Image 1 (cartoon, rainbow, N blue to C red):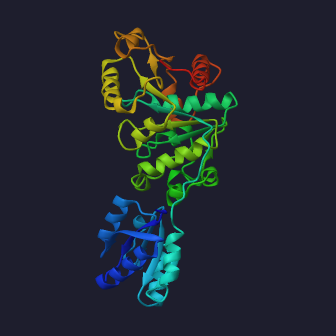
Image 2 (cartoon, rainbow, N blue to C red):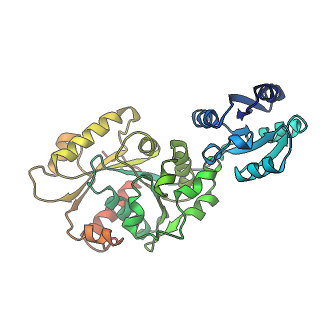
Image 3 (cartoon, rainbow, N blue to C red):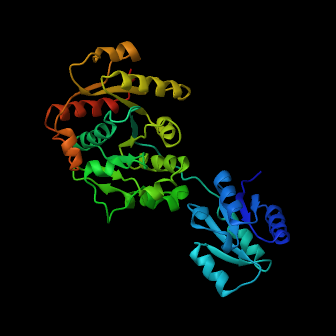
Length: 360
């Protein structure tokens, strides 16, 4: 059977909703997957079913309902108030039932999501630390600098929008720049053009998709992030994902889509224990060959670099010595010099990550 647009229908009048539903289902262009009689039911149906379009009375529609979806307004009569409400709610069209039913059917059919075919050219690298404070932000930002230094087009995505640490660590402006939240209204039909407009360019030459404000960050879902990674991977040589500590939700998307996964460790028992627990949860994803460990802030301690192989079965792919100035520089939004010992370590790590060989 040919694909048809999946529609959630919101109408207060039950008899009218029945008419619209049966007409759309018979048209062969759209299929009503749920109906709602109030704004709460409509919001819940859209969240659960992720339809191609929402067809509803404007009075039932709030901004959260139509984010990244097509909204088609329908009423049984035309009025100034209804038209104004449709415009405010972001309607792509206004239709009077039943006079405009054929036009409504055609508009619904046009909302069918047709995935854009993207040719993935980038190596996608996810950077994760199971324990807070291990240095995942430090590693992700300095890897981005290393890739840019070596002439590779790099996009760094802050996939931990609730924390939003990347912007502060890089000294990004707090106002006047775009962020991940600006892409949410077009996430389901995102193109490389949309993404390019939202990226902020760091002085070192790499580009960054910054985290949105906290109130918008709560609205980012897994399908949004997956699409952004796919589009970024079609327009760069390397995509770096700064992952949250949690290994579900957005974090899990990062692990699933990455070609390379870096687990950042510090030489202490709590870091090792947290990493082991996280990797146990992630076992169904099969990270074998994609996973490498980076030891950060290495110094003389009871637990040594050699213990990484004993506990995790492989040597770390990079060891970063403790650097007293890192915290101060991050507080001021600055990166350490790429010409020092740590910079050379990141250069070597960057090359290894794109070589295509197993990290184990």
